[in-house]
Image (tube, rainbow, N blue to C red; front, top):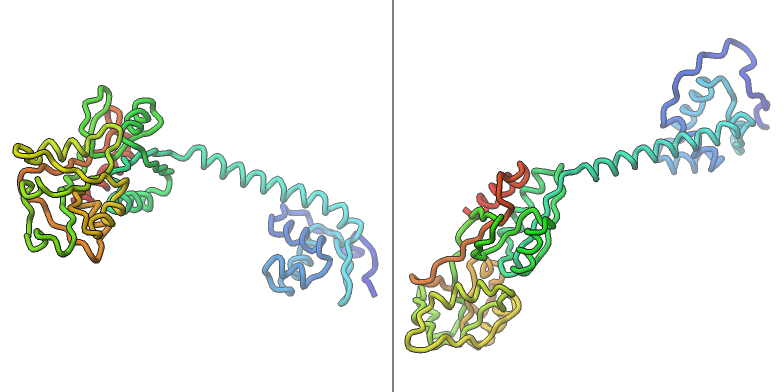
Length: 313
């Protein structure tokens, strides 16, 4: 048998109505939708006795019977039906305010837009960026991969805040913060005649079929190599220009010749049928730098530069 259908407490003085908590509105709305304490408690992830206690407390606080209930049946009272619409409005307003705050935080969040030149992308850079991002959750970090020419264009137009590259530049309005030097190495098949040599002199590669990474539109990587390798007796024989370091190592493992790449790139693509050897004197290392607009860097960018330098040390 249902409890008597009355809305106002029959005896005693009604307590003053205190501001209700969002939890109370939420509990009431879920129970009003389910009209079943066990199902409502499941949706709310609370104990059924806890839900019953909260509803009784809410009814006492407002001085009205909101539900009629027996051990087998629950239904809204007239006051509960009227209260339901208002309770839903309150919860909707709370959700709207929460989303508005999240959107404000997102829009107000400081951003760093970093471009990485395709030819130098490596785990060393990835680890430094991950460490900096973990230490600066308040800054949104956006990372894109770009060719050398696209990197310069987006820096000049303000689409990027900085770019990580090994290019040698002399562009007005841009400065290069040196991060680290990346030595060149040779990748050889394990049975190559130079495999037992600890460090390979560049002169020994003059007659070798060579593979270097496909140059970007500025061609700075290839020029850096070819300008310093000895070519007095014979021009270099560049037999292959793979698109990435992984493809270069596959070419080397197949026994096609010797691959030239940076130490950072080589560390990312170690292969069982190839060995890596440092190049001897005569070939200057690639200077990895962070390009940015001239002037003092922002505090987030300054911190990122330090993190990259520390990782490259």
